[in-house]
Image (tube, rainbow over all chains, first blue to last red; front, side, top):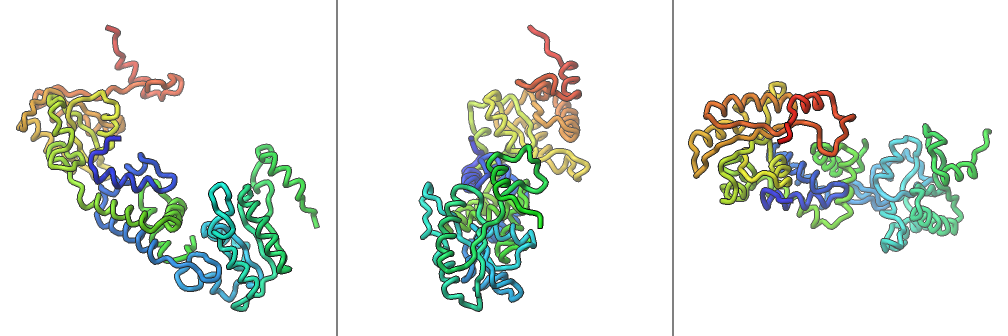
Length: 204
Length: 204
């Protein structure tokens, strides 16, 4: 595209490096900022730089945190006996939004993916093992829930973790896979439907 | 939503003030920046601030420009006899992309909208009249094309401009409205189809 000025072009290039934002959307956002008060642009850019440079991670679970320990690890009302292993902060937020889990988390920071060159050493797996070994800070973990996406990478990571955690004699579980609630059987894919039959749940 | 840290929350709030970006997308963008090099965030924020504080507008047509005159007004190969009136820079880019127009532009910077409190005085209309009056900088305008959206606001603005420009004895035209090329008659709305019949074009 033929941008009207070099400044606009640079801004569009930078904005369109964000995921899911193409050149057209980037231009729309840039022109929007031009129409608004200069203060808005300053606040936006300041918030981004501050977030990127000052964000810290929880010493225990590697979730994003304001202090050394995150709000969840620091909360004495959370169940210290159960740890839910997730890929990133968004998963923590998604599970927290359900209000169905009262334990602690462990954020891996990624998923094992040989295609993208991500191995176990690149993830926060060692520190999970240390949590289980040391049982430090009053934790006495009885169960690990693996809440990973039902993809090939997710299953690979789950398989790897499950083998490692079992050596501690701790129960390992995974979140249930099956037909989504509210979903129509007709539209469920074969693999999901097949799995939901194999893992059927008996009425008590 | 319960953000994991105050810094994230502030960043999400600022990002989600952009048009078409909700809190969820904003969080995704923020977490993306956190995973990338700090340099990327710095470059993005710098590009935004620089664009907002240093962008200048063409003295003649009010399009975004690097210099006092924009690339189009400054180009001696453009037809100085015809001015296309548009709402903003994006319209200029859209028309330039068609390669069908070789004249000059005039960017209004908005559209007359009583509902949003935008009147003729808030737009670059006076300067358009001055261009026609003074015929400065070698311009000898013979035709004004109004390229405004076919909405109520666009039609109001077009009506207002057309009356004003006619006092100079200059030809005024508007871009053709009709069924889009490649569109199916069956799916054209009644008003568009009706107009395309009224404004039918005779085969020469």
